[in-house]
Amino acid sequence: MKRIRMGLIGAAALGLGFAAMAQTNWYPSKWGPNDEIGAANYMTPATALQAAKLIKTGKVYSLGITVSTTTPAFPPRTCSIYIVQPGQTGTADGLGPTHTTYNDDILNCWTGIGTQLDGLGHIGVGDRYYNGAKWGEFATIGGLKKLGIEKIPPMVARGVMLDMAAHYGVEVVKEGTAFNQAEIDAVAKKQGLEIRQGDVVIFHTGWLSLIDKDPKRFGSVEPGIGREGARYLVSKGVVAVGADTWAVEVIPFEKDGDKEGGIFGVHQILLPMGGTYILENINTAELAKDKAYEFMFVLGQNKYQGAVQSMINPVAIR
Image (cartoon, rainbow, N blue to C red; front, side, top):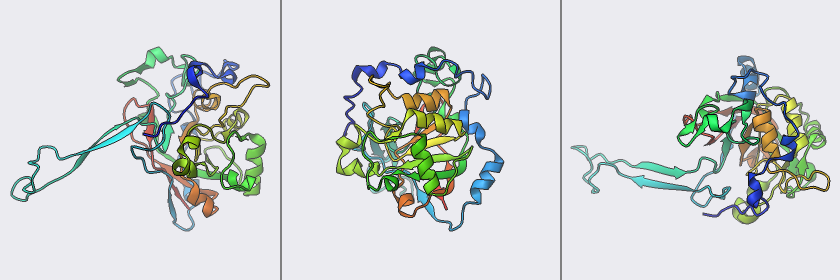
């Protein structure tokens, strides 16, 4: 398994994002102290109908990548598959007079591999997670007692793709490039788009093209959303934020003046503070090729009770 090398984090991964610690009034949620779905509350029958009106050609885009045993992943995540023929003779005779044979598979995988959905139980600020849920009260080895991935309703929304690679005039945006409000607004304006409440916003950087050509570089740094950009998108009321990168946020992490930045501070702004979902390793290449900037976004994740994340294959329809 090609592992992502995160030397920039080391033992500091246990620390708190400084940007997150500066805010202490982010819970209870505006949807009430018992809410478990966050920004998914923005989705309504009306927003689904509006998204459906975006379909003009019927072209369907698969936004997921293929996962294998060598797919780069944040360590110590790995994935293995085992093919078995349970209860069979192991010969061509198979089962019964019809000689029936069948294959089953067993996955031994971390769910945070490949194209994935980060649920609201994934990232916290100290021992507090979305809506102020305390880690020791809801997280168990047998599954989350709240904020599980099964609580998220199907995502049917207006999808917006911001082509950052085209904006910078490159095939692959340079690592460490942060997308904040100025950059987000500039690209949206260039593409003739307005980011609206209930949207799913996805960034194309070209970074996913490195997954085979340069997996070490792919998994150690990346361009991505900055802290101000994350707060801006939360303020716009988006349901989810995604990118063709493994963490969605800019790495190396932004500095606070001359001080080192916090660890996964954008994750903290989006998930526990904003209730805004994160979509990682989204395959945006074909969308960018077709200049498909606006589309119907559809996602129905695996509903494993108490799970934190889910491998996904979302779909865009134009």
